[in-house]
Each structure stands twice: as structure tokens, then as C-alpha cells.
Image 1 (cartoon, rainbow, N blue to C red):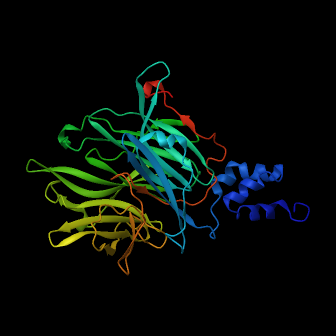
Image 2: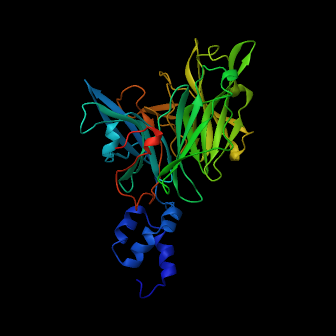
Image 3: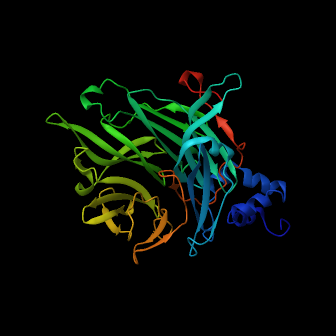
Length: 398
């Protein structure tokens, strides 16, 4: 091939190949291996349009005292949900307790949980928070120890790949406890830390931090250059602690936070106890941000309203449809397939209101789903490498 086609054209052909072929073609010649292994090629590689996305579902099964981590992956094409397979999960994932999928970005899945391992010279368990970043296409993963936080802080984790640099990134946002009044938190400093794979280190952010009155939730989504969290803004009204819903975004390029205001119908919740039947989460639907509004009353089964932010405009949230699963209560909408179908324990078709059971029996609240496309990220990383943090951050060295 190299005798008849110039190398520039070879590059154009190679970058249109699926990951499996690229891994094989690294053995053809040194020039191809050097090209495919280069950081520029890895960061710029995008999956060919002919390759489908995949929808992995992570769940847990409990047998007496043992908890078994399971993962099943559905091919997100016209055959969904009939074509599925069980990927080999990283061994470290099986050691993460109460793990959840944080998000997926550029072919990488990020899990977060509590890591337990017995120390060599002690009968005590080493326990630490850990994020696991996994490329299912390459069957490679890395782990990152997350710095601990102390009261009155709680924390959430965000994950994404910076579009401009192709650098995987973790963000730990430590916010003040929800029950602390805003008048008491003015002297408490913010704690926002960022981990980038290129540096292998956690660093603290100092500028453009969120307002201290904000309370973050674990509901997040990464779309393009931004990581989004569903959040509350707390304020006091006649001595009562009141709340208003909003969305906080983080730009992975500029490392700046912004706020996105919601329509009054989604934002106004008043006191946290006034409407306990309402709950909200966010998700990604065809590269757009959606808000999921759960509600129920005495005459109707629980339903889920789907609101989408159109064209990236934070002022244009439009209600797409309402999920009404027949003969079932909707606990959570876990995500959306390529067609817009939300794959929960069952697949719901909005037009026909038909529900198909996915035949997944799992521990309650252990099921997490996301989507990924093939990528080459982590190609040059050592499999299952653990990035620990400095002793000054009071974490456990593995």
C-alpha cells in the first residue's frame, strides 16, 4: 500500500477505520504504529458514522453477604434492545463499593465508589474514594484516588474529556451542607479541585467558583465542552430555608462555572418539604441537555416529564413528552438511546407507550446506564494504573 499511495492519503484512510482495525494495523509497520500511537491522532480520532453507539448498564446482585458487579452492553442501533453482550469489566470495578456511573465522554466511562483493600501489615481495611476511568473498546482502565472532604462539606464528582485537548478530566466540587444557613457559610472557603490525566495530579481552583449558597446533586451530564450538574440555590425567607432549582455548568476549556436558570415551572420548589413528590434529574439526549421532572398524585401513576434545552440556549427549555409507563411506577429514567427511548429496567417507547422488559434483576438503586462510542483514549496508558494523591491531601496511598 505504501508503494502506491502517499502517506498523507494513508492517514486519511486510517483515521476512518474502527478501533478494532486500528489496533490490528499498529502491527503492519512502524509508520502506522507511530501515527496511531501519537497523541494528536488519539485526541483527534472520532468514531466513523457507520459504527453504532453502545449502551452499557451497570448493576449489582447480592447473594447473602456478597455483592457481584454486573455489566451488560446493548448495541444502540435499529436492533435495540435485542443485540447485547457482556463486556469484561476491569477488576478494580469489582472492588468499588456502591459504585455508580458518573458519565461517559469521548468513549470513556467514569465510575465512582468507595475502594476497600486490606493493607499488608494491618488487619484494617484501607478505605478511600476512587474514580475509575474505563475504555471498553480498548479494555483499558485507570483509577484515580479522590481527596477526602471533611464536614461541613459534601462533594460531587464530574467527569469529561476536554474537546480542545483530548485530556480526560475529573472535577471534585465540595459544597456546604444543605442544612447550614447561608448566613453561616460566608467565612467557609470553597473547595474545587481538578484532576487531568496529562498532569496526573489534583490542583485547586481559585477563581470563578460557584456561589456558596448552591447545593450540588449527583445528577450530572457532559455535553461537548461542558459538565452540567442539577443544583439548588438556598435562601432564607421569613426565617425559613427555601430552595430554587437551577443547573450549574463547568467549562472544561476555561475552567469556569456558570449558572443556567430554569423555567419557573421547574425552578420554583419553595421549601424542600412542601412538595416531596417532586424530583428532578438531568441527562443527555442526542447531545442536548434535558431535565427530567418526576411527579405523582393520588389519581395518576408516577410520570416523568422530559424538558430539553434547545440549541444550547439556556432560555429555551421545551417539554418534549411525558413518560407514562402503563401498570408501572417510574422510579428513575436512567438515560436515552439514540432514538430517544429511555432505557430503564424496561424500554419505553413514547409514541406507542409500549414497555419492553430488559430482564435485568438487580439490587435497588444499583442500576446506572450511559452511552459510549469507540475511541483510542488511554491507548498509551498502563492498564489499571492507580493515580494516588499526595499525603498532604490526607488520602490513602495504594
